[in-house]
Length: 169
Figure 1 (cartoon, rainbow, N blue to C red):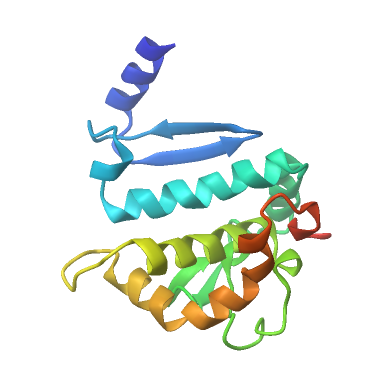
Figure 2 (figure 1 turned 180 degrees about the vertical axis):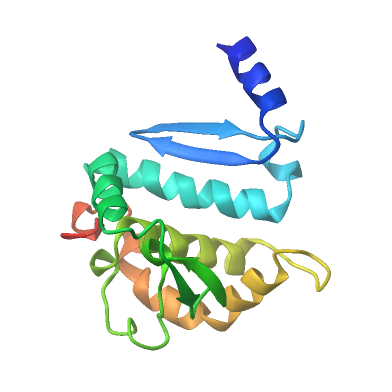
């Protein structure tokens, strides 16, 4: 298995993370393995994918939600994400300081939940610098910190609460 992954890493010129059930697949073109030594962008990506592991472990059928988003072209159609401040596939789009400000965490789809948690993680635990490619993401997390804390209040209090999972998305 390890040889197969090493060969896959040689073939792929880009970074790739995917989550299926509670299995996370990392194909990273860099040799750095320790999460503490990788770029902030990979840490953010890791947290995003760990959110899907959390969702699966609480009972969400991630694969089914992924199929539904795919059928709705949510992974194909890009639109401006107010929270991320750049174009992003529709499945990830949030506006927690505007149209989504009154939503509970479970009213966001599985990808939106992962975006919210990644923004919170970035704001709380990472430090970006102006020349860092994740600086814009970090600044957005800081700007949205109050909204993030409000939305994540129940999650931070009890992450084992199954009622936090996306409902009908």
